[in-house]
Structures are given as structure tokens and as C-alpha cells.
Image (cartoon, rainbow, N blue to C red; front, side, top):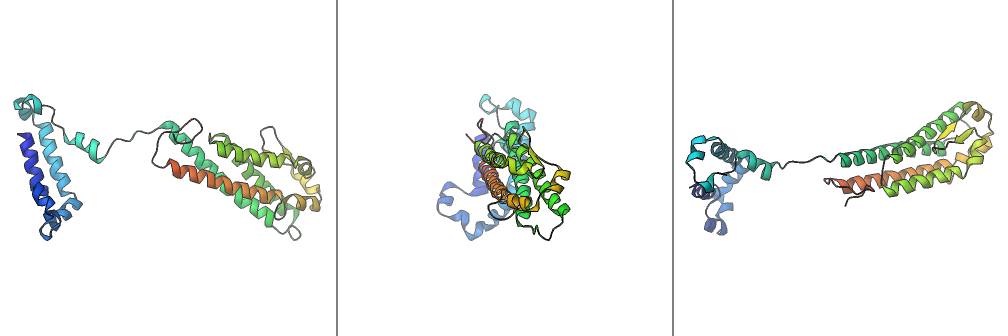
Length: 245
């Protein structure tokens, strides 16, 4: 009987099979039905029906064994309307790590570009120090954020950046800038104040300088993180390297 009711309901809502094939569903007389579907009226009707089936105890008792497992509205909703979404903790952690890398790299790109393009001849030593210190802080933030990402391409890119910095360790030491075992850099304000301006400019100023190179690498990291986040959109399974399976 339930099957007959379902067929009857379907015919009343959408027309018979023959009428659908003949195109009557999209005919002028049924445009109103389409509007009702969009407004959610049919969904409410289905909900009312399934709630009645699921809550009517007497009906359940009198139903045959073939109808004893009639779906409730909640069953239909979960399966067809709002499927349950399971949150993957590892996926969330990986996404957060990528977001942090992207954010930190954007900041480094801005700070490094400003340092590369500043006018060293008209700027005070304090202004130059502030710009160097600002870039150092954002550089260190990128190093820290990359440690929490398991994406191989990000790890390699940051390693390239830190190796490039280490290659200029002697030049940086003359400016009061040292590299720690954790690859982060520290700027000694007093030593920097005594450094030769020519040496400072040779390290940081212009295209090809360390600041410009850091800006380029930071832009690359932003793209890597952004692309991976786009690939991960709507997905929940990650491999051990942070790449979608």
C-alpha cells in the first residue's frame, strides 16, 4: 500500500511517466509546479509524509513485514538532502598549516620588498634597522610555519631560502645579524648601528639582493600554499606528505 501511495504521490507531484516524456512537466501549465519546487513546498510535503510514517505507531504495528522498515524523514534528509559530513582532524590541521604558511609568506613578501626598495641614502639608521628587523621577524615566521606543514614542495622552498641566507652568513655577521641552529635570524641593534652603510646596501638593496630574493621566494610559497589549498577544497583525505590521495 505504501508503494501505491508513493506512486500516487509521485504522479501528483510530477505527472505520469508518459506525461513527463511528452514534455508536459515543462509545459506552461506546470511552470507553477516548478516554482513550488524551488520554494520548498514539495520538500515540506515529503517531510510531512515521512514524519507521519515514522511516528505513526499503529500504522507500524499493522504494516506487513515488508513495510516495517519504512524510512523516516530523518533517514531521507540525511541520505539525500543534508548528507553527514565527517570532519577529518588531520585534514583540518594540514589546512591550518597551509593557511599559516600563506599568511606568513605574504607578510615576508611585503617586508622584504620594502627593504629592497627603500632609499638607504635618505633614510636614518633607525629607519633602516626597523626595516631589517621587520623583515627578519617575518622571515622567522615563515621558517616556523613551514615546520608545521608536511608538504614537500614547501619544505624544499624554505630550505632553499634558508640555505641562501646561510651562504651570506659572513656578510650578515658584519651587520650584526646571526643565524641560529633553528635557521632563524637575529639582529643586534647596537652592532647594526655601527655597520657600514655600504655593506648594508650591498646585502639588501635592489634587484638580486638578499631582500629581493626573499621576496621572490615568499611569493612562490604563497602560490604553493594557495594551489594546494585549492586542490584540497572539499576533500578530507591527505597522504603523509600533505598531498591528497
